[in-house]
Length: 453
Image 1 (spheres, rainbow, N blue to C red):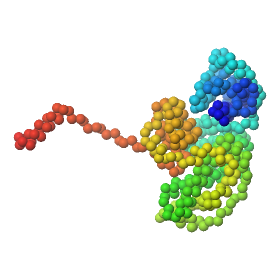
Image 2: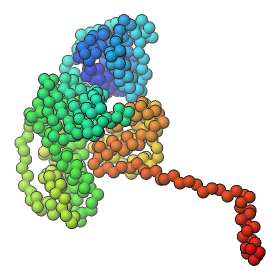
Image 3: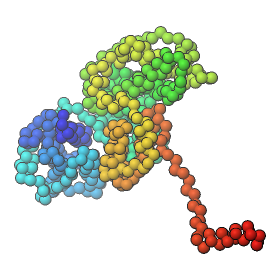
Image 4: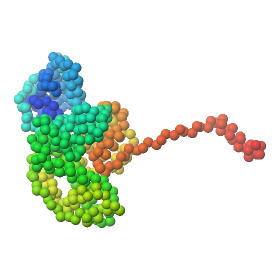
């Protein structure tokens, strides 16, 4: 799939998550049900309170720019005007992130070419694309204490322990006190772990017709439970030295398993990844492994065993057994779709390279491009790219974004320790000695040596 096809599909998902009825047309203006071939996107602009303000068309026809055309008679009151401006801002950020130009025109003052106008008129087919996957918007809404993210008719609701600072990129992803998913019927379920990837994966499950307590829903929760237990274990054992090679192998197996879980849960939080999972998921009976918990404890004893490691030991043992036989028995249902996970998602970031990168200020650059380019040598992640783009938008091109990068790594890698260097305290430089004072001091020294003083 080439770049414009990726952009078209992502744009379709972005619009579809906000507006129910959308028709799409290819570059010739003919209706299509394939979002990757869409170059025209027609939909009625309906505000959150249900008021229809008429048709809006978005064009990607020249493959280099995104153009929005709307009716010149569109009249918005102040509240609706603010909502319209937020919508345009989101599309503009989308265009900038994909390095294409952005233009907004009403039909009375359009700068579209004759070919554009002709094809806009033709792109009114009836392909509603109801069977195309819904993808959540990356935008949050809510108050200073509550954040909401929509997944079609399903919502993810996050309660924060501290007030959200809208000027700080990514603030709605932090300080999570509790997390809920809400169905289209208004049923609300609290998530047992405050991990965003779990909440988003469960929201995708509900948006695709699943239930919290069905077999797939329990499987998703089980992944988060295993990940939570392994997270503490990995943080506390990955840098320790063990004389026993088998114990070292267990630690390495746990680290590998944790990476797979993190990648899998992240994949499930996106519409396409969830669909791939749903197509291959087969419920599997619990596997009872035989192990001696006391013998396992002995392997990881320092002077006093940390009981918080106990919960992870069954998972550690299972990961080690799976590694020994060369197969992932516990996650067979993932075999056919984890191969599609981006390789970088399973690759350990180069923390040495990151340490070098973080030793100096990292400039955001226009739309965050400078910072995104610098960080990609260490890790390639869409969420981090979005945070850096937002930072550039809010703080300016010259902003130092190291704190944002540092916070993201702290949240996503339990083995990571902050790498932001502590700036040395500024000390007042010594006052320079003027030539006159220097000469006077020299004569004083000569007089003292000659016995004249």
